[in-house]
Length: 204
Image (cartoon, rainbow, N blue to C red; front, side, top):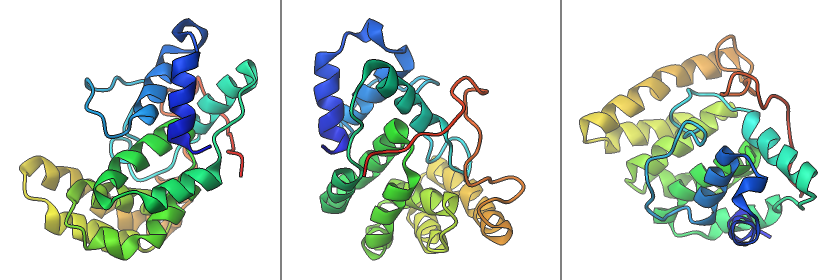
C-alpha cells in the first residue's frame, strides 16, 4: 500500500489519543498531501526546505516507533515510488514533502526525482524545483545543481528568491565535502533535539 492510502486508512481507524500529537499531524498531511490546511506546527516541519540541505533520521524513527508499538505494517516503498512516478507534475511537490515528513525515506523520494529530473527542471514550478533540488543535495546527487538553478530562475516573489538562495549556496558545500561533510551530514540527527533519535526503514 502506498503511503497516501496507508495514511488515509490509518487516520480513519485510530484514536488520536493513541499516538503522539505530532504523529497525528504528520499522518493527516500524508493522507491528503494537496489539501489546504492550517499552518503546520514545529512537530511537522518542512524537511525539504526549513532545516537545511541535509537528511534527517527522525521521521523514519518516529514512524517506526509507532508502527512497532501498535503493530502496524509500514507503507510499501515500492508502491509509494510508483505513486510518485505517476503523479501529475503539479502535485509532486506536495507529495514529496508529505512522503519525507511521514516516512523519512529520502532514497525512495530521490529515485522518483531522478527519474523525473528533466520534467521537474522544465516545469517552471519553483516550489517543486526547490523541494527536489534540496532533496537531491541531501542525498549527494549532482543533479541538485540543475534543479536548484531552475528554481532560482523560476523564483519571482522575494520570498521565493530568499528561500532558494540558501540551498543554492549550501549545495556546493554539500557536494564538495560529500554527503557526510562537516555541516551537511547524510543522516543528520533529529530536529527535535534527540527525542526521536535512531533510524527506521520502510518495507520494500
